[in-house]
Image (cartoon, rainbow, N blue to C red):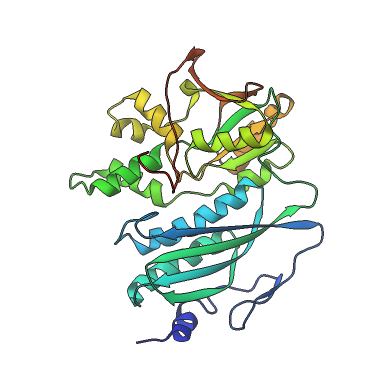
Amino acid sequence: MRGEFDLIRKYFYQRQMNRNDVHLALGDDCAIVKSPKGVRLVISTDTLVEGTHFVAGANPAWIAHKALASNLSDLAAMGGTPAWCSLALTLPEVHEPWLQSFCDAFFRLADEYDIQLIGGDTTKGPLSISLTVHGFVPEDNVLLRTGAAVGDWVYVTGCLGDSKAGLELILSDRSDAGPDHEILEERHYLSAPRVLAGQALLGIASSAIDISDGLVSDIRHIAKASGVGVSIDVSQLPVSEVLLQYLNDDLTLARQYALTSGEEYELCFTVPQEKTYLLDGISRQTHTQFTCIGQVNSANQIVLHDQGQPLPWTLSGYDHFKVNE
């Protein structure tokens, strides 16, 4: 059986070309990197745990993609440019085919976004993956949750709700799953972090957040941080045809999925009226769908309505430490 350092050398060492700002990556006690002039570092850490973020026996390539994509989504929400990451991988045992599949997918996505693995740790225990990602933002320009102002318009990227449906299918272990169901399962694991869109929104969006715990929860973070309220028109929520088919064309239920679906890793952001005209160009440039779903107000609450008709829905997103949700 291979030891820890043999595994590191085989599966992690020399898998990527060194970035110009990386002086030393793997192989010593610490990595050595250098930040370019005129930028600030943005740093985020996330952990994925078997049984909480993915089911036992899940495809290791999908787990790897989800682990890195979810962290890249945090950078996207700040308008960051990915640079480096470190990985702490806890394994119950060494299963080399699993590790090979995991690493192949991990480095494929890392290379796509030009983010280099510069260190980490491997240890024995219940399966979990912890990643810390580092990126750059201009010194005087970053997307935060605190900038939303009354009158700004609220937008989201992509379609919402598919991840929730995919998770339901994964947990149900349905034997009659068809091609549409496979799409939803992939949507749960294989999100596309909106890095390019986040970068393009610098200087245009007044606030931003990535949708990891459900839109209805994450928009509250913007509202609270900015001291504002938000009115959401559920008729404008972008839902996919495959989600509607899964829900037997129940549009009301699809909209509720869109509001509560966690681990979407789309962006929710606000834009002042005078800058909204710029979004069409950014959408084309980044190949990203933008949908306006509401407006910021001074009410200090989140209000849901359907084309002006108030809705009595009581919805919440995901919280790791709440029960009976």
